[in-house]
Length: 88
Image 1 (cartoon, rainbow, N blue to C red):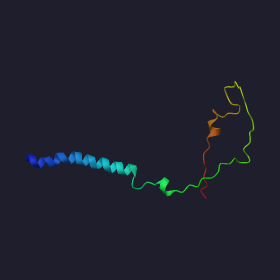
Image 2: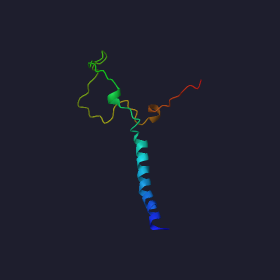
Image 3: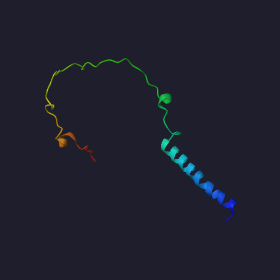
Image 4: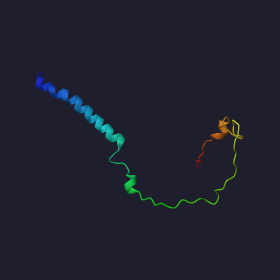
């Protein structure tokens, strides 16, 4: 094997690594397929208003309780429920 014939083999390694890097970069970045939210979406601003049901219910100041009454921290089966879908 001559020295000139093996040079392309040495160049193939870095060129292949660069090509693989660029392919993975384009695949995971999706720069050519991304949605340009700022350019393609029209957002209409409206005045901020409070709802009629926004009213103060209770206020607690200076409490020394370490727990909230009625909490369900340890009753995880009551907190987490399965979502059941009807198969019909």
